Length: 308
Picture 1 (cartoon, rainbow, N blue to C red):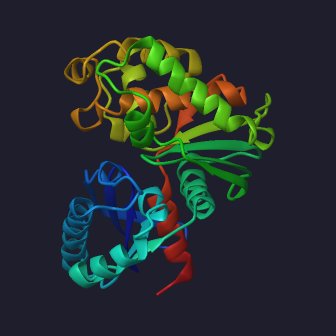
Picture 2: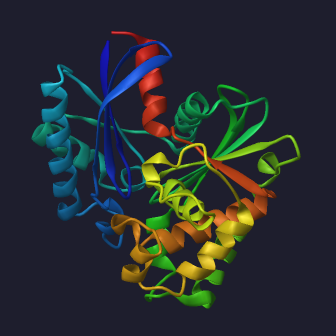
């Protein structure tokens, strides 16, 4: 059985094509398009024609790749940017007509549960796990056992969102970053109880931002330069993340490339690092492991379980 799934996020649209059966699958193609839908919202939160065009272009590419791989249908799930857009349904209709793919807008809770499923499959979760998944528009926290999340919360704390709303200058500097971290801590406060960690809790992080930060920290700890796409499984101390954040907040985007951050992520990496540093400290985590699996892998598992 061959399946194609697409994650239509606030920062990027990502496609996976895989073949397999049940829990065992092999990814045959992986494509990422930097669409930055979060930058294409008007004052009311509507997706602009520019954003719609970016989305259509990405989905046309995905449809062509899926067809070439012998997959007739692409399961496409849209997250925060479309979830919050007042004109989402009109956009979905036009995108479907233009690309042949109909985006399905999923709730933050469903996003968190599918991401947990994908991370659990790739990382080997234990009895008590906390997963933080940072996107461009939202942050999901999910806690559960070896396979499924029992409790999920989705909060408007995405890296693209807070970069736009809080960090107005480059480099942003310590004062702006501290303000962003306070916002994260204050937003988490009323949701905190189910997510406080104890000595038996394993803490994981999924998303490109987590992978990029993990790769940068690994290189600072003496490892050969690691691609963010190969950072899955790496564990680092929250204190090391704080040190990296203090370094990055005083660098320009160009200087961050020299510091080991991949070019497509240099503008939002400070916001992402600040969100994660504040969130991890707030839940009481001392260390975190980068997950190689996330929403798309959860979508694949769901699709294979459903069958042809």
